[in-house]
Length: 135
Image 1: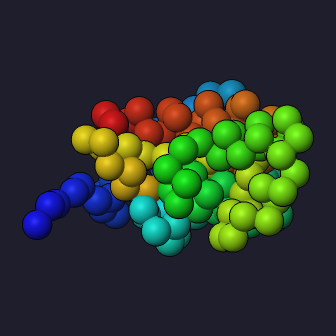
Image 2: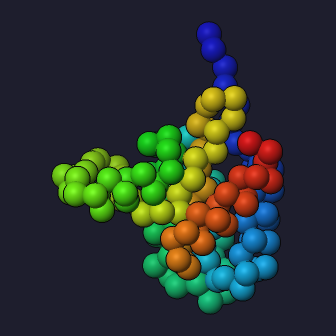
């Protein structure tokens, strides 16, 4: 039987703290979410001033990245390049940049999703969080 790493609560706290630090350093009010490999919510943090809808968007971006095992931007790009039928993909509602998978030893073990600023900035925050894990 094979084994694989998984995210712990301590991992989520470490990534969330690093993502928050990146957002604070840039004066961005965002929502930071972290999910496991099945897209199940482990962490949700809504910074003061972040729009309520960003909580839903960030969670869906993270779920999309975890289930798809790739950045949510990949799906956004496909749709923007004319593959509109991809909008019907099941379980993927956060097909916007800002969801980034957490990959350890070749295994996608979860994802970070961020919403609240420009999509490229959301992704920057998510990647800062993941970097804190050393993944």
